Every structure is written in C-alpha cells, then in structure tokens.
Image (cartoon, rainbow, N blue to C red; front, side, top):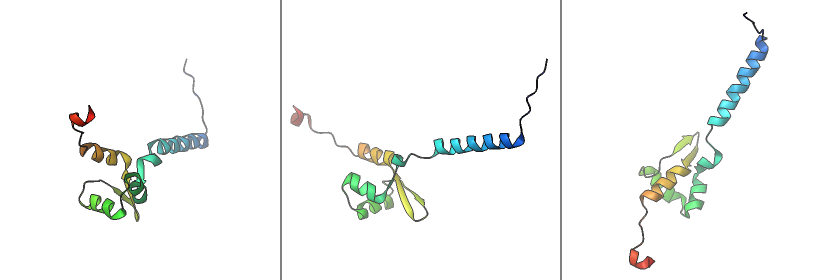
Length: 93
C-alpha cells in the first residue's frame, strides 16, 4: 500500500528557504568570537599600533571584511597561552 503526500511547490520553497536561513544563522561566527582592533586593545590594554605590529609579524591571525579587521578571541587566547611564563616555585610557596 503506497501512500503519496502531495505538497505544493510554494510550501516546499518556503521550507527550504527557512532551513537555509537557520543553517546560515547557526554557522555564523558568534559576535563574541570576532573582535575589532579597538576591542582587542581594550582587552589586552595595549594600543592599536601594537595590535597592528602583532598582525604584521603574523603573531596574531586576522581576517578582513571590507575595511574592517577582525581577530578571533580564541586566536588571542592561544597567543597568550603560548607566551605564558609560569612563576618560579619558590615565589609561590
């Protein structure tokens, strides 16, 4: 017993459109993941020239969209962790 469901093409198109929008929303980087230069400066308490030097020397990765430059928060955390110098044991005790 084969049963067929008939769906209007407009309804299918609307469903596909809604699914596409949901996929785009879920795949967009979260606002907190991408930081502008001024946000990086504020977070690290450094000036813009220092951030640009870190970019230029490829210590910090970045992306550009138009004239705007963005740096991933996770990228900043990786650099901080990589350059972390632990305290001496004698000072902790």
